[in-house]
Image 1 (cartoon, rainbow, N blue to C red):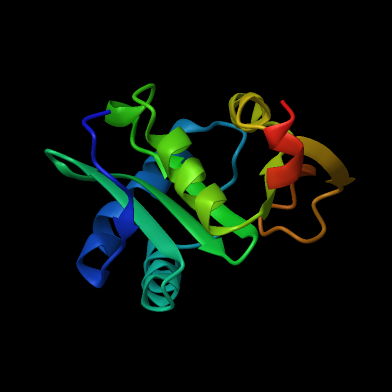
Image 2: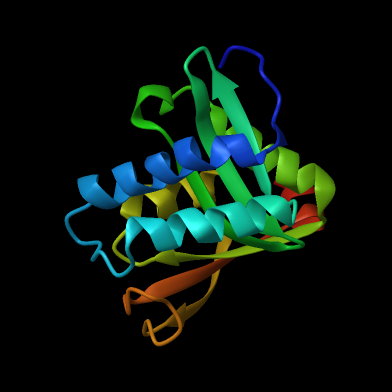
Length: 152
């Protein structure tokens, strides 16, 4: 990573962050498309206005973002050009400094994300059948506790 620090996302970042999300959707064969792009654009603008989104930039603009409301991580995406550069880890570490506990739901099929979160100190807490996510995919709740990770 180039030493950039996560910063609060601004409305002008929304199109690029939404493009990162949609790039992931298009590259992921098991992930159904359940919403139109315009809906995701509106949601991204709403959560950005609320201050939930932190972004990391590279020379080409937003390269990764995290959406978090308190302890709940709603999204973490890294553009393919920036993967493997520590941006996801930097965004999570930023969130960990702001909250003593984080929780998220990850699709069971997203093995890469599950492994990433485990390496970042998250542990599986519960499983769901997909009844509460838009895609209706089985999911896993993962939780990170500051006090537990200090012992690791």
